[in-house]
Length: 160
Image (cartoon, rainbow, N blue to C red; front, top):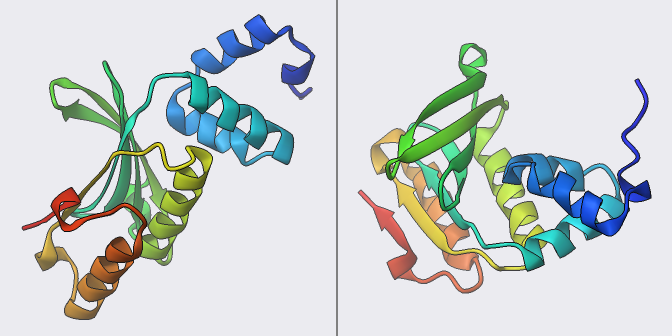
C-alpha cells in the first residue's frame, strides 16, 4: 500500500485533510515522524481547543471533548474489552477506543504527557477518580502524579 503524500499537498488541501480527522487520529498521525508531529502541533494551535478530561473510573481514560462530539481513549488489562464503543456524554456522541495494556495506568499517564506536549499545555484539565476502583497505593500514586502536573489545582479534579 502506498503512503498518502500529505506533505505534497498545497497548504489549504493539507489543512482540509487534517480537519477531517478526529483528535485521536491527529495524535496517532503525529507519532509517525517529527515532521508530522510539527504539522499537527501547528494545526492544533490554529484550530479550536478541546477540553481534555482525564479520569479513572472503571478504566483510565483520556477524553477530548469538542463542541459537537467527544473522543476517548480507554486502557484495559482485559483483552475481551478492546475495541470501539459509542455512548453519549454531555448530550453529544462519545467515541471510545479501548486499548489493551499490561499496565493501563502507566500507558494512560504516558499518553497524557504526550497529548499535553502536543497541545503545548492548551488543555483544560478535569479529573475524575473513583477511589473504590483503585487499591490504596495506586490511588495515592495517581493523586500524587496529578498534583505534580503543572497548572493543576485541587479544584481541577474530583474524587468521589
